[in-house]
Length: 276
Image 1 (cartoon, rainbow, N blue to C red):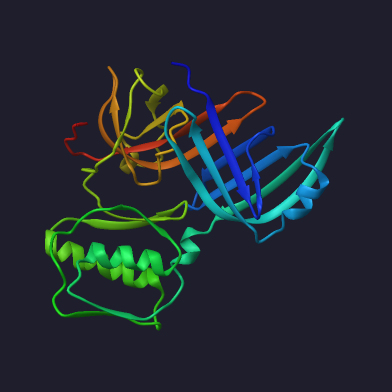
Image 2 (tube, rainbow, N blue to C red):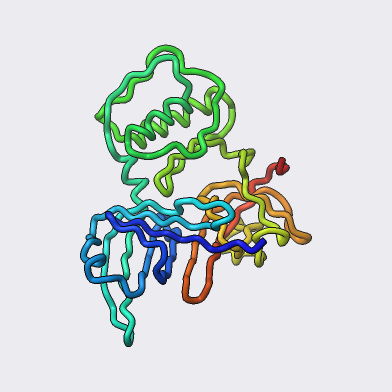
């Protein structure tokens, strides 16, 4: 089966699906998710519809396979460039998911588990629930969220509550409009497998700047839109095997060159993991 590349950009009230585009979505050095989208020969009317401050969502994947939103951000810059007879319309911005965790609200909940409350918090600040792992125990009595602290403070508290009840390290992550509330042990449902039998193109040892980076890998694979920062990746090659955490990545998709891939960096999780 030959899979056809899929890419769509929704910016403001405009949706671009059939024009020539260049897309890069990547994590910056400080972990921020940024995007740059160039659309070739957009009509003047459509270009005027795009404004700084507009929402921007990029969806990548395959028509016969998985498609996912890989960034849900806000346009911070826009500019138009003439290249011969062609016109490049370029927009740049950052994912706004982290910004949403700074919102404040008040609510008292009773008889809920930390994961149930995390799911509720996501909805209150305009995020959708991504991977939310069950804690398996509720919080006794009332649990009160107040406006004197942002949502991210209460998510930190929920991580502590989850850790008390499971003796396991937990974390929360936001990316591409989704909140993830998960354990750090790498035992995740829906982990992405990378092997040369599926999407993997190349893999090798990363250049490490410290002893802590020993064992890290860099890779390139055909576009795998299910990947996100902190997600579990199971590597299965002759030279490298095991569970890794995705620490850094970039999606690149270009109708002109046919590029449609993801590259990134993996840190070993040090746990046993089997794809079911």
